[in-house]
Image (cartoon, rainbow, N blue to C red):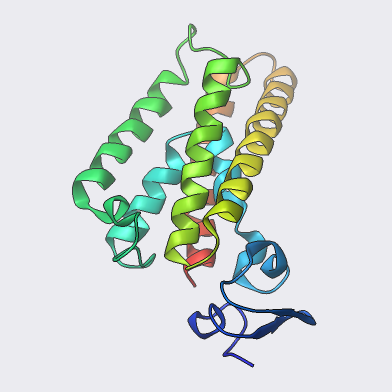
Length: 190
C-alpha cells in the first residue's frame, strides 16, 4: 500500500481508499471521502459565486508553489503575469457585480462563463495533484453550477430579509468567495 491517503505517495501505484483498491492515477471520485479531497469541490462552488475569484486564488497558490504545476500543461497558471491578470479580473468582477445593469449569474451567458471557468479550475487542480483531468473538469463544472444557483438563491433570500438592501449582502458574498477559495485551496494543497 502507498503512503498516507491524500499524500503525494498515494497518487500513483496501488492504494486502498476506504477499502476500494485503486491502481494508477488517483481517482478524485473515490478519494472524495478520503482526506483533503473531500472538500475539494468548494473552490468550484466559489466559481459559481464569483467566476474569477477561484481561479485568481488558484493562480496565487500555484505562483507561491503550494500547487505544483511545473511540468504540466497548466504551468501557465503559476506565472506571475497570469496571476496578476486573474486578480485584476476578479477585482473588476467584484465592482461589476454591484452595478444595476449586471446580468443575473444564472442567465445563459454568465452561467456558461462560470461553467467553463469551473471546469478549467477543476482541470488545473487535477493537474497539480496528478489526478484525472476529466474528473477535475466534472467536479469543476458541477461545483460551479451548484455555486451559481445556490449563491443566487441565498443572496436573493438574504436581500429580501434585509428589506431589499443588496449592497451589504453582495459585500458579504465577496468576502465569502475570497475566504472560501483560500480555505479550500489550503485544504487541497495540504
